[in-house]
Structures are given as structure tokens and as C-alpha cells.
Length: 238
Image (cartoon, rainbow, N blue to C red; front, side, top):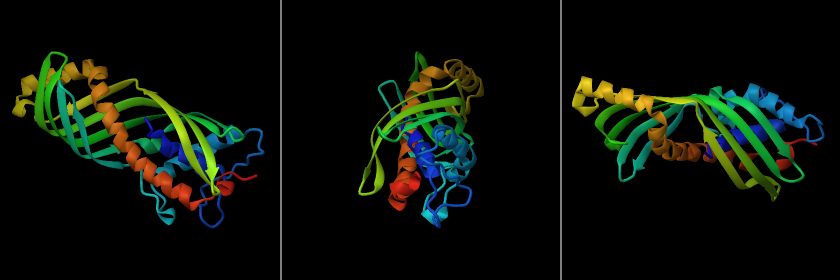
């Protein structure tokens, strides 16, 4: 779930202000602050949602909504194509904790968000032993999506770069809506949707990884712009 790279960038982004470049809603934190982690957590809470809306002066595009385009799930049992995919809700994230060790070049970000994915879908296959097929509009609501990511980072030519990361995620629940299942057979569609919502973990094992990979693509591009624009010594003041 490298999606949290975008929020990790928010942490760096907020950690120190680059005068004349960063918006006024950014609160600077200092590396010498004994409560540095708490300072960054507080700053992310305030500025993170605005970052997700995009920052035109830095060329950073909105991440809420995140436009993913095409997402493909392709395995022997189930094939799903999502087109014009849009994810909303990242801007409403809640920081659970943020820990940073500047000397060792390590950081850990833990956050939670409620997100909704909407797309046009084309689906054919089976979930467990239940056949499913359709072509229409899809809506997936994910409750309490919690992401924990650990980073290694270093400065290269005066700019920060992430050298390695490990991540994990879990969610409390996912709920599905698919229009035009089985060519509009309402009775069969209602039964199938009920089955999917009762067994949401199984289908999310198939849908979540490729969808999150697409979110990552959008996030990483905006992070790259940020790191190229602001030197490391201005991202975290002394």
C-alpha cells in the first residue's frame, strides 16, 4: 500500500517551510524540537487535507479526488476491468502516529481514512463458487482503511529521496454496489450483492492490490514534484 507515500510526503512537506514557496497554511517544525513527532502530527492534521486538494504553485495535482483511470483485476477465477476510476476520501485521513529519526534516516507513518471508489466496471467470473458477471457502474465504500508504512530516506545532492519502504494495511469493512449485474436481473443481482457484502474480505483481496497500485502512481508523481522543488534543509529546519 504505497499510497501512503503521498501522506509521508505531506509529513516532510509540513516539517519545514520553504519561505516564498510553500503556502501560508504550512506550519514549520524544527529538527531540534524534542517533540518533533508531535509537531509534525499536528501540522499534518491541519495542512494534509489542503495538500490533498492540490497546490498549483508547486505544480502538485489534487489527490482527493484521485483519478486512477483503468484498473484491471485478472486471475483465473475473476476478471474485472474498472474504467474512469475515481477515489475520494483521502483528504479526510486521520493521523494515528508519525515517528521520525532524522539521524538514522527512518520514519513510520500510521493513518486511517474512509474512502470510496467509483468506476464503470466490466466483470466476469466467480467469487468462491458464486458466478458473477455484469457491466455498469461500481461503487465500493471502504471503512477505516488503516495504512502503516516504514521508510528509509537519505539526502542526495541536497534533496531527500526514499531509498526503501515496507507497508501494510487493513480495513474494517467494504461495501459494494454494482448496477446491471446479470443484464439487469434484479433478483439475482440483489442476492449476489448481498453475498458480496457478507463476504467482502474475499473480493477485496482481489480488487484492493491493483487499485492501490494505481493510487500510488498518482501519489508518487506529486511527491516527486515536491521533493524536486524543495531542498532537504528547508523541508526540516534546524
